[in-house]
Length: 269
Image (cartoon, rainbow, N blue to C red; front, side, top):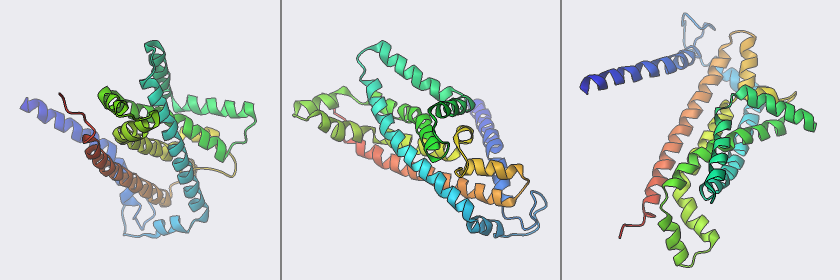
């Protein structure tokens, strides 16, 4: 067992090195005064200043966060409703069918989803821009929220709902004071996952964005094609640090909500 644990830890270390080494390489050379991705010649913050002085880029950052926040909030609302519908669906066949359709959207290639949305918006005559990007992000975020919320619903004891109804609680009170507080960690997990996916998405956004509106992922791709610029490194570093802050924030929120839901457990008779 000890030998197996040793090889397992070594494997995990190699995986993390492979995943994070390129990111830290990019971050390190974002401070290179030489302007190249090799031969570090001095420390500078000029590329970060360049990012904050680029008005067009700041507008794109604002566009990205507006789309991410709006799509995450709306997707969380619909995702919670979808998870509730799947969990309490009386017919097993219908329940399994809805869950399978939800999972298909998770595993479908982004290129297929993006192309489908492009054809859909073209048929409807919708102008590509803010609305098309927002609708697309909501659509691919809803299945993520469903998968985050559904396990919390499945582990919730039915006796909680029965006890609330025995005490005279209405359907709304059961939902707002029993179910939602219990599944709050899953709701927050779904929201943050949707937010992260929206911020990072490139493939779907690339298909549905139009002239005059773009997001950071598409902008970074466009700039990278024009040649190496360490302002891209600086921008990517800021995005990575922001993602770390989101993960840390989710951890503490989830930890606090987990403590709060412990009091909702019904003790065994």
